[in-house]
Image (tube, rainbow, N blue to C red; front, side, top):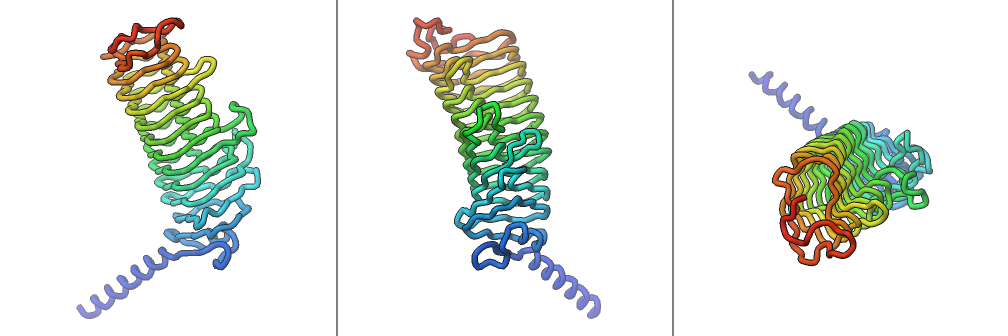
Length: 337
């Protein structure tokens, strides 16, 4: 019995030692043990934290271990205008507090500020600028993308830029409290069900949020302003959106919200104000609009095909879409879409 207890104590001590080893903190930069982030990644083990001090780091970094990469004083990670600046291939990484810039320029190779190829990561509190894609999720699930500032490559024409947040076959992610501008699309979501998008500010681009064949997504409390379209929802089912603001999305063929070939969507409590067309619906079926404010748009709605279930567009402002410029609807609350 005594021997068994001694053996158990030795095993327990070994486990605690291993756990302690996993919690090491490595430092990069002035006064740190490592000169480059990549050097620290090589030296690190799963579970370690790499703290990067203020400075400029000209390198492309791959996180192939479960690590926390933390910037202190907003260090700059500069990619040298080729490829992706930071690639995450290990599950469970945390990236925060970095200024990430100067990705490559190849749309087909997904040149990004941050390229996620793994699951269960947290990307938080970073600034990305002069990047082709901002944060690209490629077969990447259950991540949290939070409180980042993403600005696209303004020297390119709109169609030559990538999306600020691009999801491809990437389900069940949470995207919240980001500020996004100057990309092609703010959030482009393709073949990616079950994502939650909330409290983001998206402005100055083509589509604020763009769904393609992505079912069961929810977006709430976002602001989409000064884009070609606030939201473009295409070939998707059961999209729910509540309490969003679609404001001043203007231009040739511009919309607050565009639907194309969608089913079972729910729009509730949204503000759709001062757009060229408030809501454009083509082949929208079995969808519900409830308690939305639709005001001051040149045209309130345009509908080509489809049917609405309990489909009334509730308008609460008496001066909404004032007559005299061919606008649709007669200004009464609860006009049929």
